[in-house]
Amino acid sequence: MTYDLILQGGRVVDPSQSVDRTTRVAFSGGRVAAFGDDIDTTGCPDVRDVSGLIVTPGLIDLHTHVYWGGTSLGIDAAEFCRTSGVTTAIDTGSAGPGNWMGFRKHVIEPSPVRILAYLHVSHAGIYGFDKRVMVGESRELMLMNPVDCAEVAEANRDLIVGIKVRVGLHASGTSGTVPLNIALQVAEEVGMPVMAHIDHPPPSYEEVLGMLRPGDVLTHAFRPFPNAPITGQGKVKQAVLDARRRGVIFDIGHGKGSFAFKTARAMLANGFMPDTISSDVHTLCIEGPAFDQTTTLSKFLCLGVSLPDVIAASTVNAAMAIKRPGLGSLKVGSEGDATLLRLEEGRFDYVDTTGEHLEGHQRLTSQGVVLAGKWWHPT
Image (cartoon, helix red, strand yellow):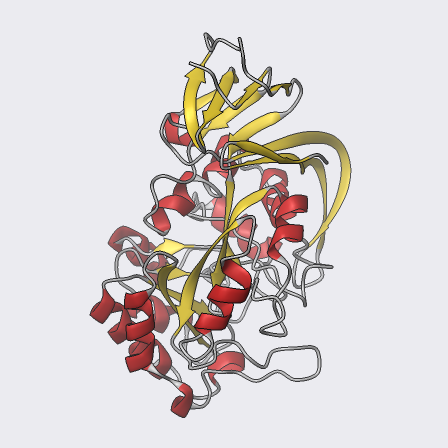
């Protein structure tokens, strides 16, 4: 068999197959065509020696805002993915049912990288969040549009993976859990999961978790106080443990204000690893403190999480969260996406959303991307 592209000499880390070793990966027809040491390179027009690099399944960033030009938060997905090694960006509620078709036609369909989305239950999504104007779209319940949200989600199942809602003082004012209740009704109607944002109370972390179902996602899960998942004594709250047993998914969603080293250290010390690690990248945090997905992953490496566990949280775990098992893996037949990373040793400064700095000794950087079985760009 002749392949379109073969990567050889790299350290392949694919948690979906429990693989962490030097081997080859071959691509053909837009998919992973072969995996292993005995791949024949004869006749392949693009055989790349990636010695010294780490080859992973294409990274999935479960929380991004990439409705560029349509909302003030939106960044350019292609440029972000080039620098961050991301092959699938999941937009989380930038668009609602009132502006979804513009997002689909003008951003998602022309995009060279895969964009999937959680559809916001609010009519126009996150429409007014900028440096000077910050409108919590869930504050005004008149903007909740469950009927149209369900219809749009049903008609766009190829791209929509769930329903997004934002609750908390900044996002929903004093509406409490009412917007979440509306989003859950939509999710039940269309058979999709919810991703729930949480910021300052009200509502409380415990209230939100108590409403989430198996497969629903709580993003900003390692928030600082208030509404942190730990007690003042550094123990994981019982509601958090109960929700994990129930099958709720805990996502990082770093962003501008939603990740603290103090919280992460306590959670990890208690053996509580997030299910997924995501950047929540948007215009207000792409220049810090989140920066990009590789920086977010690097922070967890520097907090003591193993490389395979960090990669799993941005590949196979994220793919399972959005119910797309063809992503996040280098198994034969999977989508032909891969990320090339370099693991650098040195002294690197990291900062969280509270302003705390951490000196780390490792850093992941993107060195290239394979999209649909073809090399997408040099570094």
